[in-house]
Amino acid sequence: MLEAAHAARPEGKKVFVKTYGCQMNVYDSQRMSDALAADGYAPTDRIEEADLVLLNTCHIREKAAEKVYSELGRIRQLKEERGRDGRETVVGVAGCVAQAEGREILRRAPAVDLVIGPQTYHRLPAVVRRALGGEKIVETDYAIEDKFEHLPAPQKKAVRSRGVTAFLTVQEGCDKFCTFCVVPYTRGAEVSRPVAQIVAEAERLAAAGVREVTLLGQNVNAWHGEGADGREWGLGELLFRLAEIPGLGRLRYTTSHPRDMDDALIAAHRDLDKLMPYLHLPVQAGSDRILKAMNRKHTGDDYRRLIDRIRKARPDIAMSGDFIVGFPGETDADFEETMRLVRDVTYAQAFSFKYSPRPGTPGADLDDQVPEGVKDERLQALQALLTEQQRAFAAALVGRTMDVLLEKPGRQAGQRVGRSPWLQPVIVDEKAGEIGDIVSVRIKEAGTNSLFSEPVS
Ligand code: 5AD
Ligand code: SF4
Image (tube, rainbow, N blue to C red; front, top):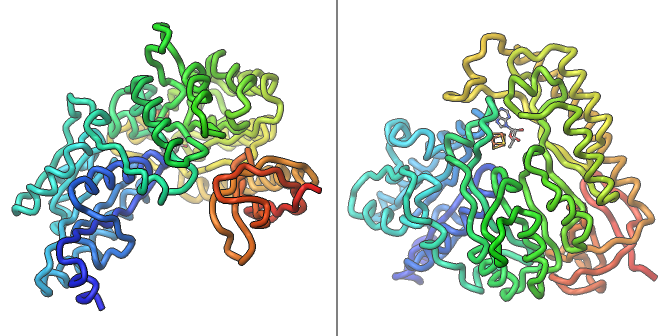
């Protein structure tokens, strides 16, 4: 079978990309695929037929990083099997583990041929060619040239195959240095892409049929740049500009830092219908002592006041957040402050994690690490509260009419799946419209993970 598939495409090289971690990695994987497509590599979702296997990795928590090494063990076997059949497989590690561990990866996983960090993806095709010549390559410098200028634009066909929603990275890196976080080390200093580049990319996406664009950045609301009017713009002004692009019906952005929610961005939430009423604004913890130890640069009450201002501007906004339990020194009373903050704010959606000490970050060197069992208990309690809030938020939508962007066919015949303005999957009758349409439906039931709708009569 494999032989036949291979023989049918004697020239066709294939790349299999596996993506771990955040949406920025999803975007990067697409851009790497685009760069490789220009070099004759077609994407495949079957690893056995891939001439090039790329793992785009995440270093944020220990578990995420360790997953990569177990996957590389499996890939080593596959590479050996293919080698016995006379077929070469190039194995590459990209992303944040590549940036953080570099040459160490070649030592721990000898099947790896190339290691490439996020700042040098535009060099990937050349690096793969060198690897095919038998070289082992580690490419983790911070490239001086702007990688986005050198990465080829995706072909219309590739954009279409990815659906009616798309990610667009506008900013990379972070200067905040929260004491638990590896991002400032793996992704480097905060860099914003210029307005013209972002607008051109968004226009290309819209021309290929994309209806919703999510702007990405590790600290996306720190984005800044010179506007078309010669003034310094922030993310709010950029959103107003992108809202003018014909065809784009919805805009989102993620992930934000509370310190960078400026007035123009809050005004964008007030004035722009296309900006969806959903905000991922991590707070991480509720105790001021822990927030200080985390170097978050805000208190619990600063965050509460900010949410009040945002809700005044856009009353139907749904809040989402990230939380860490068990940061070094966190007492039961500190954890209670996190629970109190969650009750005060109420979240429609949230992500919560046990603190994972990361090598090279200040938090990892602190003495009073919290025992694993205590972290487990706190995580359970926090997640129970967040799940309850998420359910209540969904239940309150029953009976309401809302716009849904139809994204893909449903699992059952006759259905499509769309997204509510608040990012929940909504099951819609296929007669309501085509994929890519934004249709109005009434919610009749809230399930665990999705909403069920009926036509508006
Ligand atoms: N341990 C646990 N969670 C972490 N995060 C970042 N670093 C760590 C860590 N060392 C979480 C934060 C961040 C999200 C992307 O991952 O909540 O917002
Ligand atoms: Fe990490 Fe976000 Fe803090 Fe930056 S703001 S250091 S990306 S948690």
